[in-house]
Image (tube, rainbow, N blue to C red; front, side, top):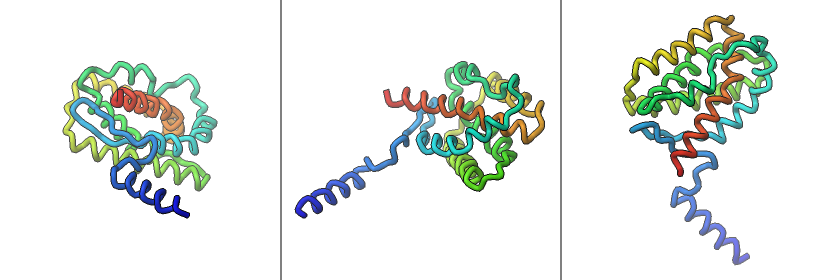
Length: 176
């Protein structure tokens, strides 16, 4: 029984020291901007909808968000690129993603809300966007509108793994 007060004291110290932040929560440094992102939480919600999105994707030959776009973001454009990608997902993708399963609707809503929160934090940074970055995102939008809206939303949700991998890579770079 003497262990219980000691354990409670340790837990209280952890809570007070801020070390109790959820696993997978981290600060991303995007140029001069810093935002908190809970990548593990994003992954969990994405895993709930991934199978449905991928199985509903009949446009196998089309890529909306290619990995090369993420790898080729220009120096000083991370903040802008992230803001524009989040905007794309919030305004175009999640608003048009439809699932008949309640759990998947909750998970896509949770992802959208998380993106809105990150986006709100990025807006405080006042990122400047270069013309090249805007053209890159315009190309993403162009691919999206080539497809029927529900199909495009499913495809973009299926490609969300690319965004999550990019966030995780940025998070690792931030902490090294």
